[in-house]
Length: 429
Ligand code: IMP
View (spheres, rainbow, N blue to C red):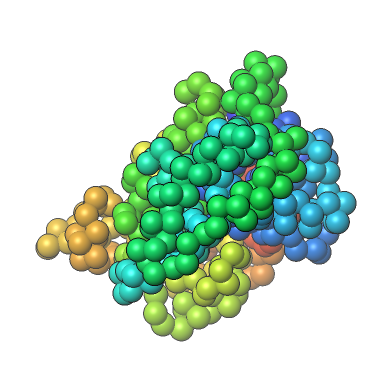
């Protein structure tokens, strides 16, 4: 149990940052394996709030190696903005490693993200506007720049020149101004020089750490339902937040993950567009949004709110193999008289439990609920499962029963201390 994967198992924002941070003090290495600064992890530490977007959450613990792996798309400008904030707050940033094969997110990606969303109008994805999709597009179109390309002036010149030819045509097609090669080159060359000490073959680094028996934490961003392959396509992000993508995204063998900890909020949220069968539009959604501070870390958008959807959890678990759940924000449900769980969907007269491939089908799925009694007792200081009010215990047991996966831990507040472990997934055997 040395190699633990943290996987968001809904539509992101499950509170992964807090869980990763919780285990980071025991890790030798923390790895981000996909996405970029579309993610936003907020952790509360000694009453101080810290938000990281690119940096693995291990950065808050001295001596932990922080790896930004090959599957990521990294904006060098944002990387240094974050690094400076962390340095000023006296966090140790000397052990940060960026994959030489990771994709470089450049200013034109962000411009194109905004432009394509505008063209899509009411069919827009509702992206974070950070350029994530366009950067992955370039990767797969084989015109992207990788970090090995920008740390060498001559290589940068060659690769940027040919990429910009395509990109300027694209910018023009959206009636945007073309970018000037020289000024972009000078800007990125400066960042290339600055970033060089952080760039290495992280696949080799991780292989060596695995051989040594180091404790490794793989930190997923977003959530399973935003997976490019198995999420609510096209309303997804452009990478796979599923734990099964870890070996490929990190350049390590298939057996490099011992345990997948599925992170699930005690209810459901989503930002951006796309289907969400258990979404609420009544007073309960307002109550949960305000109580759970459900506003995007990156974009500050109010999150859409709904009841817990078991079908979503099972989808994530069936595809990537969840070994245990971490149920977060349980305290936010306190005070509700009744709590519903979406246990199936009604579709064309039948009860179904799958997440269909087709968006048009999923939009017709209507939630089928089971209703449980709520609780009023303050649970924010609870230290064990048995200290929970009986109805909160029943709620958690119901999740286990419906998913056939045990709850390894739950969280009752934003602080590190407000975390209750039932069975430790990161313990040495
Ligand atoms: P993109 O990743 O910016 O391209 O956005 C694609 C979709 O993923 C949009 O619906 C975003 O709101 C959503 N998304 C991206 N990152 C996150 C996240 O960290 N939390 C929740 N939703 C996200």
